[in-house]
Length: 494
Ligand code: BES
Ligand code: ZN
Ligand code: MN
Image (cartoon, rainbow, N blue to C red; front, top):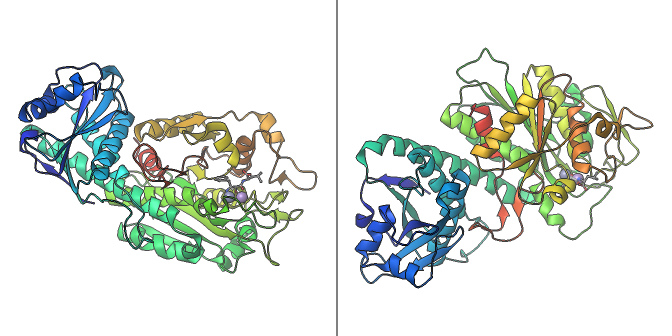
């Protein structure tokens, strides 16, 4: 969806719905909301007087003034001192969803918090547009009819002409990020029958090339020649051979060693011979969400010209049971040279990532960040709210955390004591691929980190955050796109 900036007063807005806001405790709204109130003969103040809205966070009312617009949507911002980018995104989501649910085809907005809120106008505009587009995303590809109304156009209003270029840049940037996030969500929502490794490459490589990146695909033969037996083992049970997609962004400062972003690309995870229970197995089509996030970040680096050299590495495999599948009890020699005892074929992600990390190091990466739907334990520990973060390098870990604050994708750091790494020791090989139930997110992450060979490394376990079971916060059920913007901001040095 295209978002346009219009230099005009809210009073002159032309749309099916106008979205404005209210801080908690305000009884006489000023700024854009005040202007709308005047224009509508006091519609907003009447709603406040009647107690229909008090400005509390997550509050939304749709007003139908007799004069002016068909609809005015007022969203609550909460207390003035607490407004930040994440909250602005949330209220924008709720406002856009309310307008759409009420039948609006076109919506006009103001940048929430940019006026009396005191938030930097560019930050406010970016967050408002990002939240709005996030809520208006729908995965309609497999529906004969969309199940509800769909907004078709969005206009951001700005009355101050001196802000034109700043606001235009903010809208352009937010549109690019939202489009990349939508692409990532499409990939994650796509059924596994249409995104097995070869098809994943067909879906992802052309847009990345068009964005100016150099894309290389290592097929199963190339992986064999390399000794990437982790990727090969995981993909062995599928008639669709594994692969590894590599996208390179040069950047303007080519003297720095590249940051490698490695994303898990298991296009379906049945568990393999250690097969998963039937209930909910369909959600394992999302097991490539880390890889999709890496693809989204690379797309943005190409389109928005990130300064630093960055590689996106996505090992791809479909984990299925078959006569040619790898088995519990097998020992696999990974690309790093270390061997792994297979305790469970369902602990497949770490094998694939271990190979990709070792390959990044061999290719000359300066640091590596892994992102994966790696463990159910991540979801148990942190729910669907935050992703698990860990790593070997405090500075890199802090950069990831900061990027997550900027992108409103919250993370939480896990401990990495040596005693946890000990749990990955095997009786027959260097490592085992499952250390049992205790600290499952940490042992899985540390298994991956064991192959970094001295490279600074950070890791995100996004198993809980990439997919929601039901609609929430103004967004549809399904893929969330988690991680793409975070990785982009990290690689862009923000
Ligand atoms: N892809 C799963 C993890 C997962 C679970 C992602 C739920 C999203 C939602 C991963 O490959 C897996 O199966 N992990 C096992 C590891 C265990 C066998 C050590 C798990 O978490 O149960
Ligand atoms: Zn998996
Ligand atoms: Mn698994």
